[in-house]
Length: 286
Image (cartoon, rainbow, N blue to C red; front, top):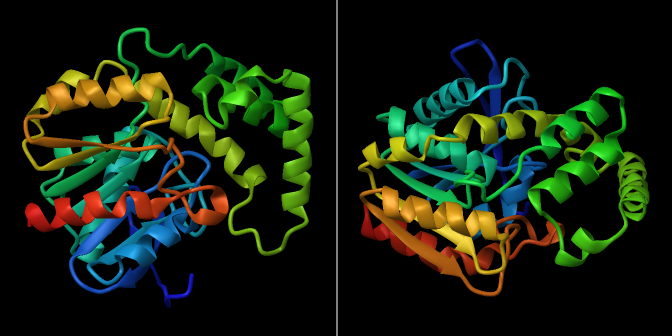
């Protein structure tokens, strides 16, 4: 990150320390990252917005600079409350699994006055089978990090479409090689090996979020719903359902990009694509 980031912590309701990095100046925007991510995953987006607001990049519990503890939707909403109060922020942006937390925070917390929700993995009807989660948990418990990561990727339909058609043995070999290579890289901020167990918490959020869609009709705050044109169908369905449910929502589909668009460029992201919609929303609903 070329801008100087100030590192701070907030203490959540259960005593867990939640670390975050702050860049920029102006009204606060808290970013709640998604699966297999950390605060650094959105440093490019933070730099692009830093001239308009103070961006607070959070390491969700169990990741990076934050402490660990119980993992649940209630705990993460409490974490959001701690960071919002610590920073005096009123705007929250959630990505993927972090967007499920953002929806709940917008519903429950008066501190959240505006929310940006990017492709929460809410299961609408039978849009996604979650049977793969049990296999992922078995593989993590057995120490098979590469196998668990492949199971999670295939089950959640992440990665380039071609990977969904590749032999699982080849995918596991490739993933194991990537994990080992990253293990040897001292510059790695949060490694795949360290993040792999946190998928259990994110899959738990998916399970907790099942059946919660109707509750979000009570979120009367301004919400920007973002999605990528090339993202998996079940994520499109989730965003469509939210657009029909939230009473004060604006939906924007980002062209020619997929689920990783908000990530840093070195992780395959193109966050500049989303900046115009973000700036317009934050300015118009101020």
